[in-house]
Length: 369
Image 1 (tube, helix red, strand yellow):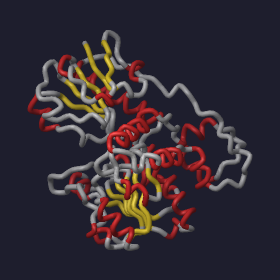
Image 2: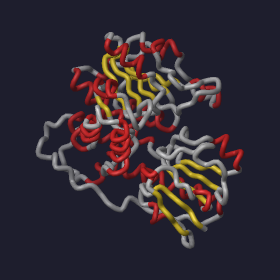
Image 3: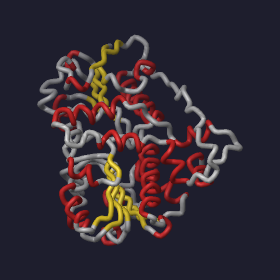
């Protein structure tokens, strides 16, 4: 059996079953033109699957994406080609939730805001939104869950109304990007929502869920206090003006922890193995973080502690260096940041690496629960 895969899939070689021949491709070179010669194709969000990129299936029987989202894949087209589809649902939920919490506390520190006096509206309450809710609950921060499609499928789940959501101080988005159906999410957060005035908007879902032109306009008109974007319309060639005004700007890496990337690779390979009736392998995060060199400062705040041990600041700095670059160079730089910057550890792993007498903020211990 022969498979072809994105060369940046984390530790993929260790997960491939015996007897399977692995060929890799560099997504910077575009869609692999010989993909139809292989039995399976494994990708990330940077590789688009549609009638233009894959006009016929050839030998292909399975395509898997090592990501939670799947809007980069035309699933109707795959059905027409009779090609099976797999993904890694929920693989990065914890990593994204930790990104959101870290950004929330950073924003609150810089704006001198009291998060205990704010209400956070969570738009989309699947794996990732649920992980955000869990952490907010542990931190005693008020929130409202908003997910009408989920409430229709799961009677036990109660969604807030849109009117209730729009009374929140902060909105954070965790939905797929959809343009059809009863609840499309494309530009769902546009001027009609933003006119209700928010202290902060966070989008770590998909570019296009938040209408960036409206966001920028209402930000300049003081109806939106700040915004944090990890995903962008027209990604990877993001808007210079939007990025310049963002409180935090990162290159679609909210879910990029080592644990999440390994989980994604493991899940998509497991899906492939089930389809082809192969015996899957299992590996663990073998490496561990160096002991955090922050223990000298016993007065370090929860916010500063998180900020100093994750890489959001690095990603924000490097993303801003791309502002104003020519179209092609900006896109390449964005993709390189995503693919080649070392990933961070999740907070649970960091906690496990510390000594029991290390002076860490009490709040940080919630990540180990």
